Figure 1 (tube, rainbow, N blue to C red):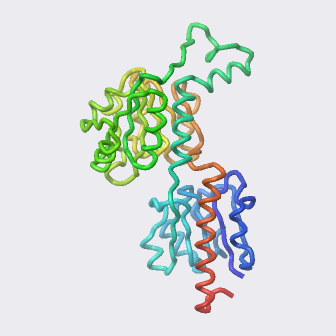
Figure 2: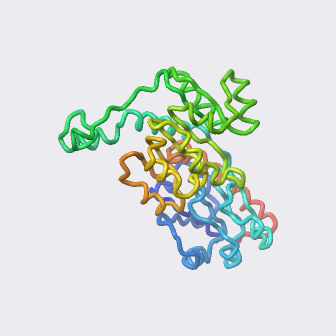
Figure 3: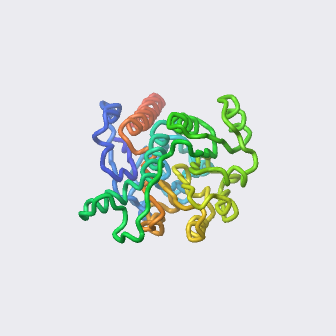
Length: 326
């Protein structure tokens, strides 16, 4: 019997998905691990008898060392798009097939707006103080109280105008915001096609926005793209929202920038070295943090695992025809 392992099901929901039924009748043993395994040797031990491996996005890196130590492993499936969490060259060397899924712009675009609205109207602090018995207060001390703000008439800056950015822009326009775009040539073309203003100069773009939201792919060109100079160009009351990749910001730059008063607020769904990397931001009075929820919702999980288990089923049947699976 072949064994399929799913890593990092933090919420213990995969076994309850309708997509699980795609594996019915295959005679595959399914193991779902909910606890993240950080130690590489511990990970190798956990996967020693695994034939098929399904990853939930980039929660665990599958390195060359891991691949070389797993002679039974024949297939790795990435939910969503491939992103660098898998050493593809090592997979080729060891005869491990790799399959990827498709992206979904809906959930991350919606979460982006949940963060923009929650941070702008100070929803979480107000709720926290209400639980403590304080009505219409967002902080304990009256001298420290400040109001949230509406978005109508303010400027929304979108850095990276792809599928997610387009959805974010549509909501901004519906709320009466001015929307401006920055990014590479593809973003300029898309922005002009949609009748939106494109600002080519990076610092000029950043200086204009009341809300900045990032929607960039992580690559060598974009890693640590946003540093001290970029953040210092933002307004002291601006909000930075990152539901894309933590590595777009240079290490330590955001905390330094908030300490210097530009920008004034941040809302983050992504962190370096998750989940431990979120700790340095928790409790900061100017940062709203969520635990990487951009894709974590029912419809996206069903789509991701529908594709992933479909890949496993197809590979299993094809291998059987070649005399592989028992």
